[in-house]
Length: 169
Image 1 (cartoon, rainbow, N blue to C red):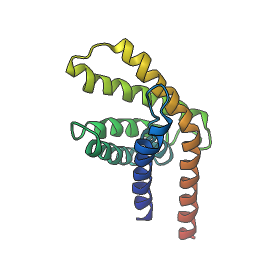
Image 2 (image 1 turned 60 degrees about the vertical axis):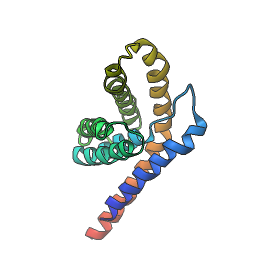
Image 3 (image 1 turned 135 degrees about the horizontal axis):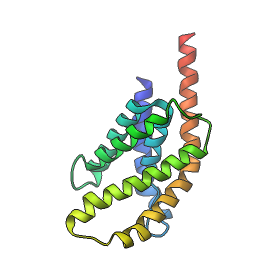
């Protein structure tokens, strides 16, 4: 129960950071996607189901606050959380390079999905411009922000693992 409350608080804090604090640190017209970093980290630490649920809640919050279509961001983040959850049993949790790569690839996939569903369907077919001026800067900025936030999410995860192990003893 406490873990669920902490995940909800993480989602809320990440959304507030992404929408308010990082708007002051906008580079090349983009801000890092802190919610995506949270979804990828959660999927990496806890598996597919946790990544799926965190992705759904994060996306639903985005849908309710800034989305034009309810459920679109939730679907994007759910897919990202689910597929990143495959790394749960395969990779070492203390490896920093793999999660950063996963965040970068996830941001790339997210940006392409966003382009297809939100821009292309409205008749905006300039993918080259979007890719060069939005996608690439966003991937780079999110990957750099992931260096800081992944370590923070790892510390929270390890803290809760210790607390759970003490309760079992």
